[in-house]
Structure formats: C-alpha cells, structure tokens
Image (cartoon, rainbow, N blue to C red; front, side, top):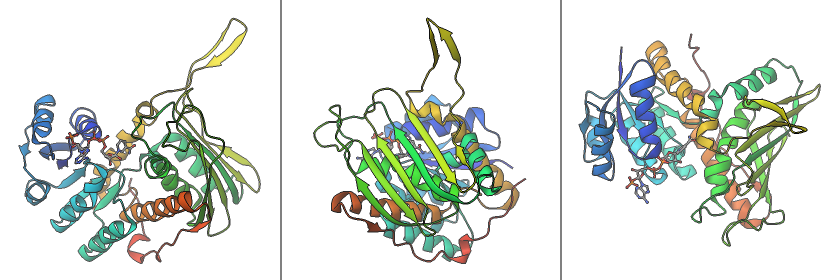
Length: 343
Ligand code: NAP
C-alpha cells in the first residue's frame, strides 16, 4: 500500500520532506500540495516532477479523497487549523512542530482526535529517532545508570538572525529538549525557572543570550538546560543523564579524529540541518510503516505536542517573571496511554 500525502506548506522543510518521501523513503507518494503562496506550491510540483493536484487552500486539500495523510509544514501559527481540518476529514497527520502555538490550541487538537476515536496525529519531534538519543533511552529504560536524578544539556548554535528574539530560545530552540527529555526520563515537568547569565557581546540588542532553563519533574529530577545561540564555534547538542549508579552521555556525532602539528582534533558541526538529517528520514518512514502495520502513527502524539505547548508557555512566563513557574498539565487521557508495537 502506498500512503498518499497532501502537503500544506512548501517552504524549506516542506520541500525537504517532499524530496525524502519522493526520492528516498519507501511507501509514500505526494498527490496534493497547497501553500499560502500558490506560486511556491507550483514551483515545488515542478521542482520534484510531482503528479500532484495543487489546491488553493488546506480545507480543499484535506477533503481530497485521494489523500490518506496530510503533511503540515506551513508556518507555526497555521498548524492548529491545518491539523483540525485534517482530523475533521479523518486523515492521518504528520505535523511539524509546533502542533499549536498555545496550550489551548494543542488541547483543541487532542480533543478533536479523541472525538474521532483513533490516533491520527504524529508531531515532528525527530530527536526521538536520532540513534544517539535512542541509545540513551535504552540505557535508562534498562536501568543501566539506576534512577535518573539530574540531567544536564546544552543547545548551542553558532549565530541567529536579528529576527530571533528572547522567547524563541524556548519556543523554537529548547522545544526539542522539552520533548525529548520527558520521553527519555519517563517523567512529566512540574515547574520551570529561567536564569540569564552575563550576556554575550555577540547577541543583538533584543536578545538575552545565553539562557539557563531549570526544569523540575514530578518525581524531583532537576534538568539544567543551556540555550546559547551565539556561541560562535558550532552547532553543539549535549545531554548527560546522571543516575544513582552511573552517568550516560548522548554520543557525539561521528567525526574524523586527526593528529597533526602537535594537536589531536575533531570537527564540530555548524549546521543543525545536518546534525539530525538521518532522524528526519527515520521519523517519516516510521510514520508510514506504523500506519500500514498497526493503522495508527507510532511517534510523538498530539498529547506530546500538548506537553510541549504547556511547557513552552510556562518557560515564557518564567522568562518574563524571573520566578519559578508551574507547568500545569492536565491529567493524561487513557486514550494516549497505550502504544501498539511496530515490527
Ligand atoms: P518556511 O520556509 O518559512 O515555510 C513555511 C511556510 O509558511 C511557507 O509556505 C511560507 O510562505 C509560510 N510563511 C512564512 N511566514 C509566513 C507568514 N508570516 N505568514 C503566512 N505564511 C508564512 O518555514 P520552514 O523552515 O519550512 O518551517 C515550517 C515549519 O516547520 C515551522 O513550524 C518550523 O518550526 C518547522 N520546522 C521544524 C524543524 C524541525 O527540526 N523539526 C526544522 C525546520 C522547521 P512563503 O513561501 O510565502 O514564505
């Protein structure tokens, strides 16, 4: 069975996903596209020689009987309505982050999906598909380091444009840690506080950089997350989980080691797109395979999208108040408890 995709949003990541579904992955095909800028949709169809219908709006695309699954890669504020339209039409949805820009919006999606009665939505939190994070997760779940007590992590970018503001450090950047960390340690967040160390001279006037975000979980694990988006030297993702019996580290990406001129060296990546490129492939392949095998997506759920939205809201509040703020999650519905296994 070929899963037929309708794509909403043919910007940068929309086109990358179109390319991987068309040229690289197995079992999917693009049959419809739309974009707020129709010329962009037409260009994407030409660029990848797609045999696809171009729609003027997302509702018409979702209603197309030929479309099995909707790929939402529009800009963030449009995601909620795109996803609701897809659920209304009974279509599977792969939605790039954020699922919605507010916790209320994410909850509307959760409720629409539960009303539909079957899981349809996967959120594009690709780090869960990165081999290093999978290794870390397996070690924690196998109790290799005992009960996790603390987590230290780092998210550094060489630089950001003038349009990148203080809130984006959590809404656009930390959001990946927010998703992957509660999955890693099997716990929910309880509170968050944000500290601002001495500001780097490389950050523009409107941006506080770096930031330290301290998350506490319901069981008492303390997570210390650094976001430093003008670190200058590279794109650097680190994660260290400290347990009762030992410490586990996220493996560094493979890189050639050289010995030359009295120096032992290894390079550090500079482009985030390259760091998780394989994870993007694996997440979309898993979306297609699990729908075929078990009739529902197997990856991060709409509930995970809701957790991310509530937590980023609390982080923004903590950025502004300087105080410890509650992460006030609703009780997880039983609908999101069970996960069927995919071969
Ligand atoms: P993009 O290149 O800007 O394209 C997104 C689409 O939104 C384009 O159709 C663009 O239209 C439209 N758009 C941009 N700004 C808009 C505005 N102010 N009003 C209305 N429409 C607007 O963005 P992208 O990099 O592909 O990102 C798309 C989504 O994927 C975002 O939610 C982003 O957070 C997410 N993303 C996730 C990852 C990840 O690591 N998982 C990586 C990258 C992006 P135009 O063609 O007219 O500009």
